[in-house]
Image 1 (cartoon, rainbow, N blue to C red):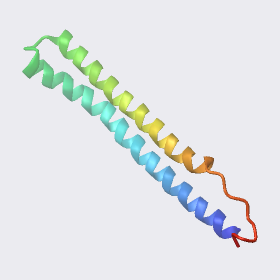
Image 2 (cartoon, rainbow, N blue to C red):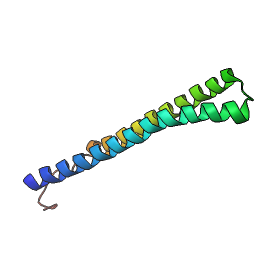
Image 3 (cartoon, rainbow, N blue to C red):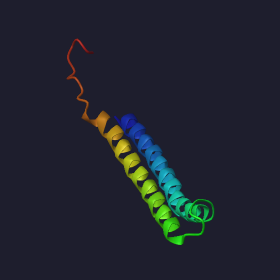
Length: 95
């Protein structure tokens, strides 16, 4: 029984590390992508029109945010799926 607890603790620690890594990546992306899209679109796409460049930055920030939400939902569904599987009752045949 204690081996099962140890294995589940190791799996939980590994999952927490993956979640932290994902959070850091999306946090950096949420800072870098809108700023870079603002300045790149200001110079190359909209010919110094700051309003359209700001709209581009807002849209890119929302894209990163939606990507994080979708990623979190997919991860939650993956972790919930194994818990929903029911174990077959132990019988003499299964031993």
